[in-house]
Length: 193
Image 1 (cartoon, rainbow, N blue to C red):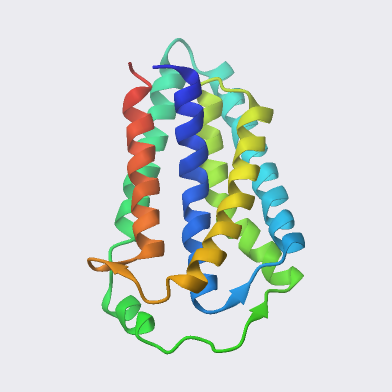
Image 2 (cartoon, rainbow, N blue to C red):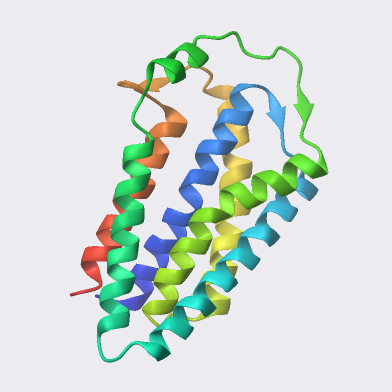
């Protein structure tokens, strides 16, 4: 499989959760300023670089094709976990029925940092998998950061317009998370082709 295709899929997978989070903020009419979004993207970049270098280090320790197999297994497990975590629950359905905020507000720097760390978990774990597969740390991390910035912004903008829209049992944000998990499973399989 072409390396550029795997890089694109990893970038989308790392960022699609950010779209869902952006949607959830937009639905509640909470904006994320360009500065806060930039801070989130920088945190995503740092987590991604850390994950990739850790993956590259593991790749030097493990012999033969073991790094590739381990990278594919890690991405597959993360993909399955993401899909299972999005299963709608009664509590989530009750929260979705709550009235939304009528005033527009912005998140602060502290919440931006916490949000950046939370959203970068995917970038970190995807980075370990990408490092094990031998991809460029700077390129993958830069694309993850750009993807984060664009998807958080787009999510907030769309969220304001898509309040209370559901796809089956899933909200738009949860549906995006399922797609993220499926994409990781696809990358895990394509590594062997």
